[in-house]
Length: 146
Image (cartoon, rainbow, N blue to C red; front, top):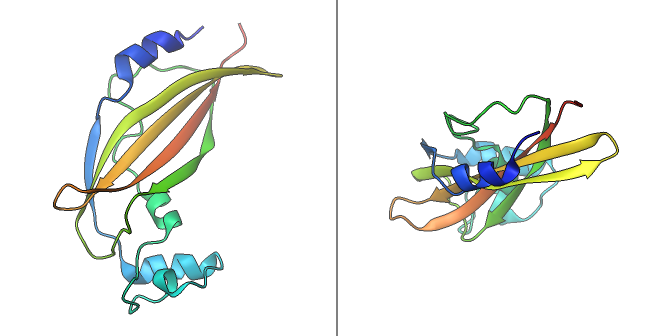
């Protein structure tokens, strides 16, 4: 059985990857239109308030999903969903830096046994170091029955 508290003490909040991004305005607008967005600040790149849509931010990933020395937990791994927190509008065409760390590790028990949740967070910063948004990706691992 995985020692969740040990994983938390060894890996939480330690940056393990950093990657640069530039979001393309046309791509962001196309994604926004595809999911039915109608607000000009998300669908019209020529709008003075144009900004990247949240699904584009959720799609940004660093080169690594977990720290290089993170132990294999075995079991069955599944995507547990995404969540984006917007702090400031993210403008397209600017240099962004994504810094990734494990934000949470926890366990839950269900009908099929215990599941371990790993929440990887990428924080997006502009060139002056201002934190603009965070995107969480949850990985769920169903432990193998013993």
